[in-house]
Amino acid sequence: MKNILILGYSGALGSELTNSLANNSDLNCIHFSKLNIIDSKNINLLSNFILEKNIHIVINCIAFNGYDNCEINQSKANNINAIFLDRILDKISNHIECFIHFSTEAVFNGSIENKLYDESDLPDPLTLYGQTKLNGEKILLKFNNVLIFRLPLLFGPFHKKQIVYKLLNIVEDNKYVRVSKDVFSTPLYSPIISNFIIKILTDNSFTELKGSNKIYHLTSNYYCSMFDLLKYLASKVNKEEFIIPELDCNFKKLVKKPKFLGLKSSNFTFDFSYNN
Figure 1 (cartoon, one colour):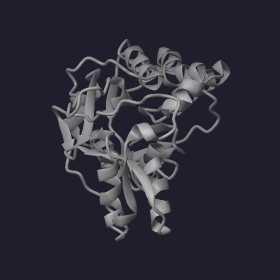
Figure 2 (cartoon, rainbow, N blue to C red):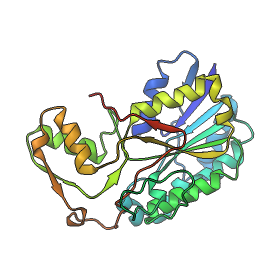
Figure 3 (cartoon, helix red, strand yellow):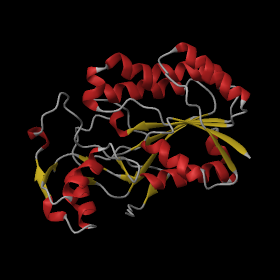
Figure 4 (cartoon, rainbow, N blue to C red):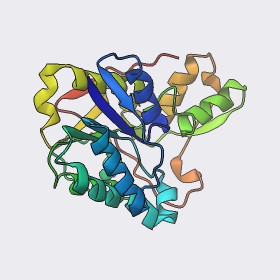
């Protein structure tokens, strides 16, 4: 049986993975709750915990998210999205089978309409959030036994603090919401990711992948605007008439975010699907 440690297990993607792993008899999901990753003392506690519990796979779901949030808290964003990775991998990389990390489509510029970014495209982040996530990627690739997955916009049952879920809640109360019609991605339903990760951990055909030290894209085959996505999801509860298209520039925000994102993958493109 493999011992799996999920860092950030209480977050949206971490919760999704924890929920899926709980139903798998071949994988033993272990939690470490005493974690303030800016505190070097807790870095030592975490590394000791990983060694003592004989952790085979570490899945990192910790991230400092949000374009405006990162701009306001620049030091914290870089500490969590980049420096933490250097500190912990320096201590554990030679003692684990694989460190799985999730990055973002925001490492790209997003300035070219209808452009889908594949693994060969050079990152050029427009935002501090994208830059800190790119910094994290560069740090991780210095170490062995690292697997990085870039993700597009996510939605799913555990993403209750995310904008998609919040807007759907408003719509279900028969209230109108304005949604950007000119911000694009290739949205991915988070249970697809958790099922894919479990397959990597349990299927022998993925053994070579775990030691590849590469960056892969996980994406869907549905390229759409935020408006298109919300209208589709609202249609599942017969509320699509409450979704109103709006230009992104009409929303108040601190940071100009990339508008034309979306990932293309040489290996892992999933059918767009949604189950409510």
